[in-house]
Length: 185
Image (cartoon, rainbow, N blue to C red; front, side, top):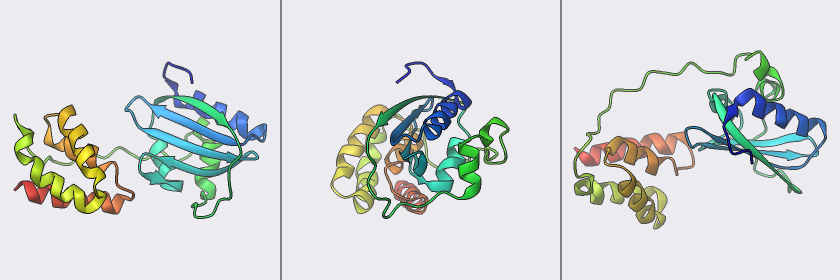
């Protein structure tokens, strides 16, 4: 893995070269904002794309908003694609060269919504309520995820986002955030 961050276009050129060489394996991308993306290649074909909690076309849209990243390729055989969501043609075209012209995958960055959750001096006072909500979504691992989130920040919004980033779908994330915020009221 290259240790320094480079423009995303340079990273995607590496991916394009791997596709042209008909490689199989995992192409890992880490962003400056500490998000990760994994692109599965099978015989030079993009088999699946994930970005944070997003998959397929939505993952490529999120990746399009990245300015700098670093990457590593792990060669290896990729199993059957059962259960994977195939990429749409526009997302695939952008990923394999359209990024050079930014042909429409980049989404305008929406302004941050007004924060409803407070920044508090002692977020541990709210921990029980948040942990209870997290348990209903994540099961027993929620306790560890809450430990990590509460020890890393005193900003309640950041804590909720960190815990919520472990959920599988955007809909689950939205429901968790709404329930957690309600639990704080």
